[in-house]
Structures are given as structure tokens and as C-alpha cells.
Image (cartoon, rainbow, N blue to C red; front, side):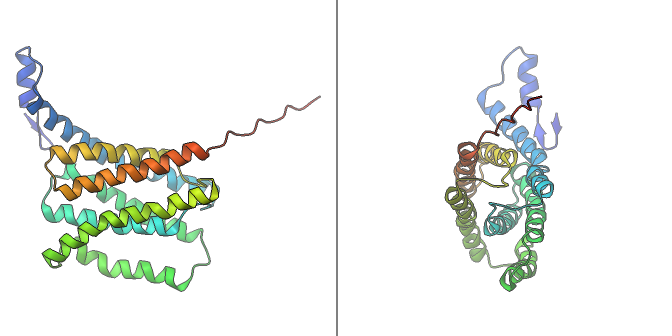
Length: 235
């Protein structure tokens, strides 16, 4: 029995015999299911952040460079996974995250007016280069080097935001829910990547994401201030 590329026959056969599926049968099944859960969750992971900005009409405390680098990192990671022919459950969330990241950067630009000339050059440069990378139409050696660099890109995408939070002693308009889902997704993706026997570089990237996303999440919790209690009116 197979559904969405997931083979349930092993687990079902064991259960019919009154046995609990063994590790070699259960772990790959759990990995695929978790992989598709991440893909499904990724369709809305950045929505809380987008809605929070639109609600407050503010990008206070958000690092524009961090979100721009996220777009670059997602683009390289998605292109690499497509090029390697990994199963959709192993990377599908990257496609949805990339689209949402582009929308998020556009919104940040809108609420960061006026923008300097260099800010406009970056998206134009991305629009010119991204299609070639996604199509995999670059030298294989260069492609590997580019993918290796995306770990550094994601790291440097988080550092400006971590530094911004630390400097301001506040996380501004960062969404707790989005950061929580980013962290949880990174943790699960480490497991699924290992089960799918993804390249070591892919696993390292997921682990790095878990560490940096966990740092930002801890900052949100640490710097969160309880709302001041409203004074009761005296009649």
C-alpha cells in the first residue's frame, strides 16, 4: 500500500500479525510523514509575521538584511535539492518558504520607505540571477560551492537579527509563532534529512537553522515584557 510515495505495507503487515513495526520499518515511515507535515505547515509559517507587520503597519526591530539573505538562502537550498533529485517530502517546504519570504521582504520594503538606491539594486540583481540558479544551469562545481555557502548565508541572515534584538533589548515586531514554527521545522528536518540519507551538507544546514532559530526564539521569550495592568477606574 503506497500513498504520496509513502509505503505503508510494512507497518500494516506487522500490525495485522499483531506485532509492532520494527525500527527499520517505522523510522522511514515516520520520516516521510513528518516531511509532509513540515511541507504542509510551511504553507503558512511566515503568515503570522506578515499579518503582524500589516496589523501594526510597522517593521520596528526587524533587520531588512536578515530577511533579504533568507530569500537568497532559500533559493540556493531549493535549487540544490531539485538538482539532487531528492524526494519532495525532503525539501518541499523550501518552495513555500521562498514564496512567503519574497512577499515578506516586499512588505518590509513598503513599510521602510524611503528606500536607498542600493536597496533597489539588490532585488533587481536577485531577479536576474535566481532563475539561472533554480534551473541548475551553472557549473556543477560552482553549484556545490554555492550550496556550501548557503549555510553561511543562513547564518549571516540570523546574526543581524540576533544582534538587533540584543542591542535593542527587544524583538520588536518579530512574530513568536513564526519563529516557533521555524525552530520546530528545523529540528524535525534534521531527523528527516538523516532518514532520507540526504547529503551531509543538507543535514548541517538544518542543524544550523535549528541553532539560530532557537536563539531568536529564546530572545523573544527573554525580552518579552508582561503587559502593564490597566488601572481600574474609580467611580
